[in-house]
Length: 560
Image (cartoon, rainbow, N blue to C red; front, side, top):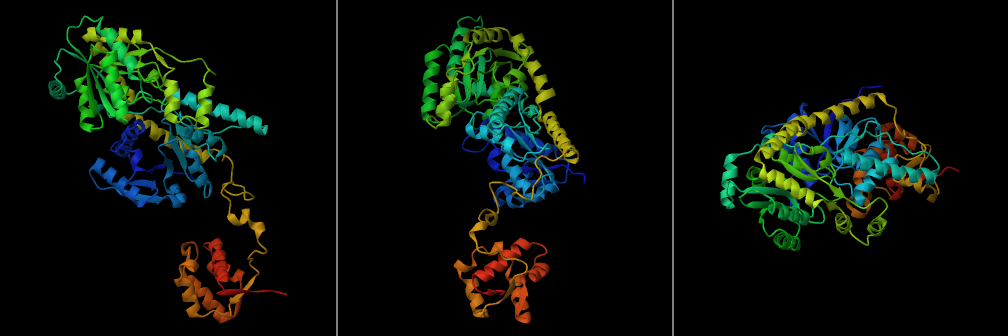
């Protein structure tokens, strides 16, 4: 067996790797950080880009050049040349939809390269379908779906288990999959978050916040039904401010971006209604400069995520990198990234018991409710312990030494575990291990010549072969038709209706040679043309001959 190499080609769509679009989502922030780390750690001479268009490829080149500030060597692999991914050995895609790429690979060499994807939000139907369909796609043991937290992996395992159970009962057989499911967290560029006293001073002056005042910061999308409902945070702050000994003011800065005006109005009204004792500040977090500087302005970070679409949670990691103590909900990936009473506090949560909300699943399945409504209903049944949160706030507000200690603990944790310099090494190790598995493991579902590469993407003349009277076979003999001449040939070539699809046939130079051979010989068998012009692509030759027959450039000599 030829040993397979491992250079990672990137499936590139600019939208998935930058934060400059109209909407700023967590997966884009994570994708941008990963892309920078990948580029900076790249040890090979060539960057491989696998994309849908030259426009995306150009964006890929520009992004890398702006990061490295020097020219690089690039290799463009269009989607319709996926077999060339074997030149790299590994394909990274910024999502869980490995299945469609596995089907594409199956048309050529299933051992040619590995496919590596990653989870982000896994609550919507699209993500669940992508993951569950991996059980029925030609996934190989040398493929991987990276789970960003153990919480995510448990959900992925649950999706697989439920679908395997159904398929097993349906087909009375055991269903399984050999897919690597490593847990690799998201990362941050820790050095970007080092506190800056000048930023702190200038921002506080601009916002009329005294140095002795306490700033509690939330950073992220300001959307109550899809991220973190703000009212429990407001209620906890209002309770805390009545118990603290601290004499300065308490400010809550919500730095983020609203989905629409209605959402903005809801936040503006509810903060005054439920936390009237707090000074509320809203900042536009879409501006990179504000996102960069705001960490230095804060004393405490808070994120009471209560939504099922949350999987990892990057902002507490950023806050810890900035040396801030964090208060987070005991929810999703926060359970792994934030150590309770060491880096901050994890606030208890509560949800309904299992098998309580099939009505939500049913209505979402039927599209009676959309995804936003589905996760909103789940959010409204997810409880954050407000009294516990208030107690955590009091401890941090009244104890600057505790704030410093927890902040330093978190900063050190990020440096050791979540800095992209360390996280990207886990990616490199994974990709190297996938190459080893490709060199050693048996293939799952090898191609069977009796069935198509993709059962649902069959050769049309396999699927509809019974429609026809005859096939064009090697023993068939051809000649030029009685109406053929150069004028007729030019007429066929210059008419759109008869020249459509020229790129799926042999070029005109070869067609001219076929015609010349028939002029010289009078008639020739298809086998002759296969031997002379069909060595490289016999299928295209056959279709070309049929095209020439269809428009009466050639004619078939019928044997008695």
